[in-house]
Image (cartoon, rainbow, N blue to C red; front, side):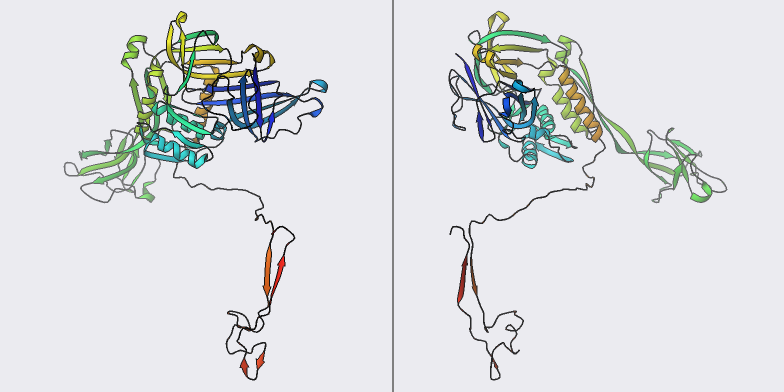
Length: 528
């Protein structure tokens, strides 16, 4: 028994790859696939075969060669049928070695690459159900990918803004808010599904498991979450009755201050404490921001601006800087496992409702309970998609018919693995964060810092460059020409003006009749 492979790259099929790696991985709310393959390149056998941008398909079969015709497979696939494991784009070509050890290695990603490579322009969505936003993003930025498998959620987003976040990360953020996961399948269709609801239909047990390990950890738990967003200005007011003094202390440090005295409708003219010259400004009060004081001025230059004691009412309208802070706690989790705190600081959060949505997404059960991750080696070749579920039955590991999420399916094809049927490693259940996850989060946080001051109302100047030639594809042409002679022609210089001398004159009358010559027919040398 042996496993066979075939690659379709561009319009050609290849059967001689020395090794093929396909990894379909799931992060917390999405999955994506990568690909690499190595070919012997003795005497430049494959030197001109591959082009960056080519479409790649990877097939595998057990005990028979894959069917030689593309797009003739029936889904779902059984073990004995051709299994389409990967559909993506070739992104890298590397030449190594010399002499009889020359090799070409090609690499690529599935069509999530399209989502990772394009950013969402500054955009705001208000009061939209999540799937509506997903479809709009895909239609705008990746129209070549179908949205036929995007499911409707039960979550409506009050407010969310994207500032040059990749489409991939935007979908990940949306999936997080509603407990969904997404991936692009081998038919170029976006699947946006509730986590744990799509079954692979596969059972992993002693009949197809070569070995397994399971680890359980609480290192990624978060049951006490703080969300810090940006600071926003909110309107407030303080009222005073004049007491004869010149200093009145506000509740908060003021922005955009307006001072009205004695029932008047014209605001007093203000200045900044210790930064004005009264002789030139006509200032009536000073604003001491740090101490929150309104100071009415009087003197030779400024005049007497102190409100009359007991009679003048003082109204101070101003904006205060209010932080967006939300906190949530899962009491059941903290009681069982102790407090596991997490702090999120994101200046792109400019609305309290947005902070609440993020908080709810963090306090889902996946984050408030310990995580168990399994690593399983599989006998044979099975088509598994990260994000789907698989049934695991290992009674000796205290796992009895459990449905687990597929976190990663890694295929490694080479002569040794193919003959031993040891090509597939699977990770299941809950993702335990590793160094790569931490680095990804750092990169995403840096992107958010870089774009936090971008507003959707900003005017954007665009420069687009393109160079191309466009013309109709003509197989053949036919032309008929005919001399108009002395006939009347509307708009013509001579024959189009009634009463003017015509090219042919009979006596004193213009010739306005039909005096056209016969038609002349011309044809190209192509087919008619």
